[in-house]
Amino acid sequence: MKQMENRSFGKFLMVWFGQLISTMGIGMTAFSLGVYAFEKTHMATAVALITLFTFLPNILLRPIGGVLADRFDRRMMMVIGDLGSAAGLVFIWIMILIGNIELWYLYVGVTFSSVFSAIQSPAYKASATDLLDKDQYSKGSGLMQLAESSKFLFSPILAGILLSITTIEVILVINMLTYLVAILAVLAIRKSIKAARSDDERKPWLVELNDGWIEVTTNKGVLLLVIIISIITFYLGFLETLIGPMILSFSDSRMLGTFLSVSAIGMLISSLCIGMFTMSKKYSKILVLGLVMSGISFSLLGFSTNIFIIIFAGFLFLASLPFVNMSADVLVRNNISNEKQGRVWGIIGILSQLGFIVSYSLAGFLADRVFNPLLVEGGALASTVGSYIGVGPGRGIALLFIIAGVFVIVIAVITSQLKSIKGLEKGVDIVPTDPTNLAHD
Image 1 (cartoon, rainbow, N blue to C red):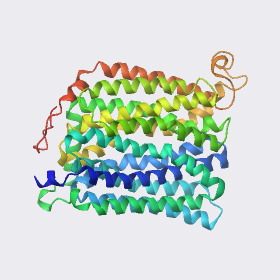
Image 2: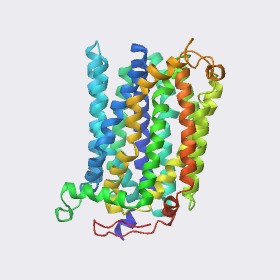
Image 3: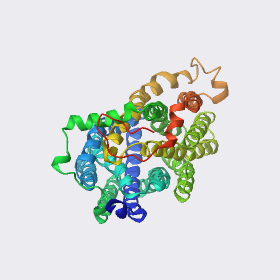
Image 4: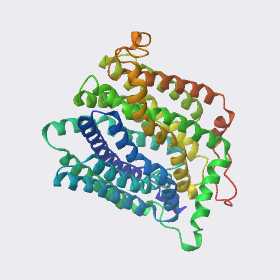
């Protein structure tokens, strides 16, 4: 009862606001480092490596972060994660001030930040369950998507403006300060977020990690949902990594920033709608429709070099993502007990984002060595596919986007026929059980 009384949408909003600010800072830094790497090397591989080192440790270590979120004080896990992430930026900042910065400095710095992000992320995801009632899950998910969209909506245009009037060092300092805002927000509502469990409640590390694995893999619906999302992230990883090099191949960083900001208005609108209105039932149908729309708009990105068409496609694509993410989030959250949410989100984090690891690793190679050579003057597909989507720098990436979009649509059709996914709609209330048992839908 006391936990229920502590739940407050207003307190959730405070934590969410802190994350909104820090996410904007992260987006500014990511944009700036990506532009820096591309301008220095003119290779998509350099941008892809920064993206890979930013996310790989986060994904691989997230199960450990999930166990920490359930085992220790979720408030402190969030604070420690933010402090460590800021420390990685401090390293890059110092190296830049010293002068003669090399790309490996960036790789080391973003990797260090990513390690601590793996501690913060599961604790943040699990804390939403601490603060929200069940009928507020969809609204909370929508607002979390809104915070996530800020790094596409506001960060690129702000970073583009700042890069034109100041230096990357200033942007790094701003990002460090945004982490401070997030930490203060958590500390302000610390009594409402799950504290550490007593020693008597704790089990051996491997047992608790295995509990999370059992929760995910024994529930067929949850497992299939995670597999589907992992396949989708494989294709989305190509988009996230290569949209910059594709646009920069025929435009500049300011236009790239404008594209990301304007197209992200779609995510802003969708996230606001989800956050303002309570959505219930039919989450599986919303998931399928969101996947179909994202696949169509994904392919549309590659059909033209007209920036207005690309922006329109980006708008549609980002408008569909909040519905996909919200549906998956609610279906999982309603079928997993709160006591195991940290470790479950950690396991889901690594399983659902394995696709990102693979695509980040392959994106630079496929763009520079496979697809782009096919659609240069005299390339193998220049006279066929090139007659429809154009020939020249970056058009091979466009072809990759078209193919990926088609596969996303195929995944959506398959998902619509899976009874196990539809079965997650039932999402009954769950009470703590023996670790060998899974909360059934």
